[in-house]
Image 1 (cartoon, rainbow, N blue to C red):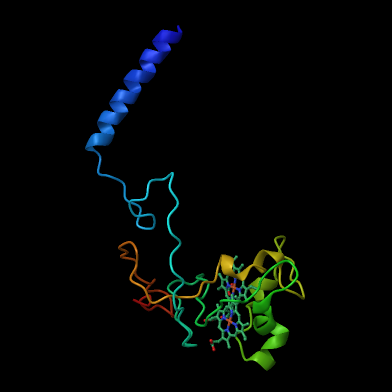
Image 2 (spheres, helix red, strand yellow):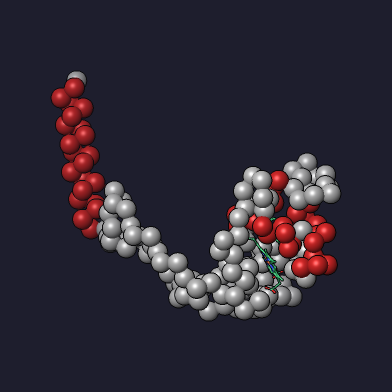
Length: 154
Ligand code: HEC
Ligand code: HEC
């Protein structure tokens, strides 16, 4: 029993190796040729876009991208630097865009007087931008129905 199992396994390995030989080699644009067991060198920190120009959204529910640098902005359990400027009660002073009302709605639909925990970690959804060529080709076009529609920053 054990030897027939072994034979089956050996046959399966041989055929899958055979298939692999014909398939195009898989190259991950982020990892390059580094094997999956290896560790890649971390990408160099770039020079994030900081022109303060709010960018159009490509579809209605897109979280707007961040038009300013955010390095060093601490966001943890006790402190949220983003809310220092973006909290609705802070924006008259900071002149930042207030978080939209959706950010105050909890998971059962209740409207809170403070940011919902669902929206606390801003960088889950909002990202700063780098002026770099895309790593993979992308033909995505903004939704024409969206009043804000415009091509994504090249
Ligand atoms: C010092 C104040 C300040 C802090 C801190 C700050 N922002 Fe901003 N943010 C602004 C201002 C002002 C704008 C309006 C555009 C501009 O002037 O850059 C803005 C714009 C944005 C926008 C674009 C909104 C839109 O509708 O286009 C997003 C998203 C954003 N910030 C997210 C963040 C996140 C996430 C953090 C924390 C990592 C953060 N901001 C920290 C002041 C701040
Ligand atoms: C779960 C995803 C998510 C998280 C987390 C999140 N946002 Fe948003 N944000 C969105 C989406 C989606 C929109 C656009 C639709 C909307 O307003 O709900 C948005 C809109 C915004 C806007 C534009 C408001 C406007 O009226 O144009 C600002 C500013 C903003 N978010 C800031 C923040 C800040 C600051 C945090 C952290 C405290 C945060 N967001 C956390 C998804 C998120």
